[in-house]
Length: 247
Length: 128
Image 1 (spheres, helix red, strand yellow):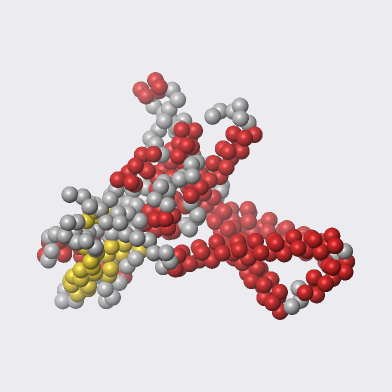
Image 2 (tube, rainbow over the protein chains, first blue to last red):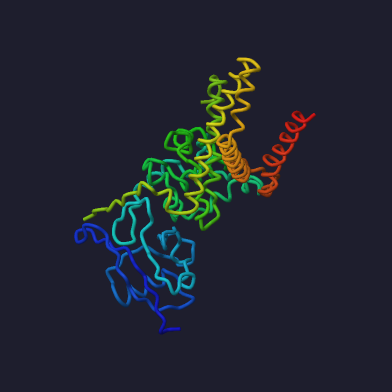
């Protein structure tokens, strides 16, 4: 097994040196229990220490190692070489993001979008902070699925709207907004509506549905965004029919 | 020094994978359904213009071109309806206590069952 090899064709971009990115091929020893991340680590340790990529837990929890593997957004720690062998594997940084260097994407825009949905519990009562906010399992079950997101950004790479409309808040952030809106302890629904219900919010989504397909944590951001659309429409009707109501 | 590289999105991005292609097919169904609605409005005008005008259109609708058009519209409407029914559980999940009702059950209850009932009513209305 050890004398078998597989080719990794890796996207390289070295700011300052490369004007445009290039693909560099590496011959990597093939092991059927290796994942793409193992192959990249082997390259970095044995062949080319300049290769840059993000990773941390190598077990599908941290969400750092998302890459395009043969054109599909995947966690490279979960993409087994055996699923591609003996064909070569093309490794690129996640699409729809600027590339900082090699396989490392720029996170700034994503983090801004994430922050814009106010992903924390907002309370009307200021002095509630020193008390516990109790929640039943049924109340927890309403949003638990949407709280499983690991911010791996695979859904942003899978979503054509993210690429075409750079201001689109995007699947993960919108799903996280819904997660807090559905939380029985939270009062921030109206506050988040200005983002979730805006033109750059849920309504920009055309329901391609690929965000849900690629999600490694079964968060179903596509479903979350559609539910936000329904909520936004209800909200709009309520504001037209009952302008004297809240907000 | 930071110098992020921006990759262009191909103008044919929707051809790059099967899920994208099927998405575009779904979007395109609206063109045919829209065209059919225009045809329905034309029927109404013919109806208002009297029996002879209506009969003329009825004859015109028997042309092979019209039959092909109607077959395409039917296929488009079926594709759109079925994919939409299958997506309904995502848009409107139904919860009972801590459990979420299984997706197929929601799709049947909110989509397929009303569809069959309404279609049966229409068929009954036409054939009786």
